[in-house]
Length: 204
Image (cartoon, rainbow, N blue to C red; front, side):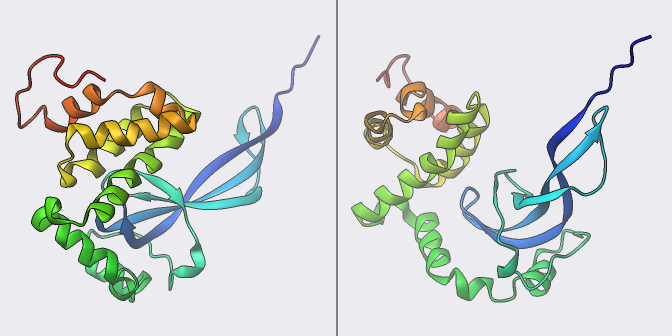
């Protein structure tokens, strides 16, 4: 009789609580779920022990974007989250509005009139969502990256020429997002709910 044993190690994520932080996709202060990512031994794919800590990540409770989490910047990690953002701010990151004062003021300008921003500031804000979405195209199919890209771009009301300029930048650098996305696809996703466009009007 032959016995087959399946064992090894694999990374797993375990939620450890919530913090308040600034979300660069939602463009506002939001609740985040903090996860412990560990390399854990498994037997028949069943985790054994806590394993070796690799890093902590945080996932926005609103848009589900995930990024690395530096635990030391938070006063504490709260658990559970009761949907009271102000209480979460007070217990986990009470100085968040001072820390992000410049960015919060900039987002107020975006909400008031994004076209009134200085050209270079607007360009940086347009490039930022593409940089956040790019890793999804390097390591996956990109669907998640496109979803986050659209959420982050919408408040800026980008023009066709601006989207093309951003994609051209990434295409020249060799990034997959520049090769796999087209201006037409992004413009359709940005304005399909508000503006009816002629077919092919944004073809790259």
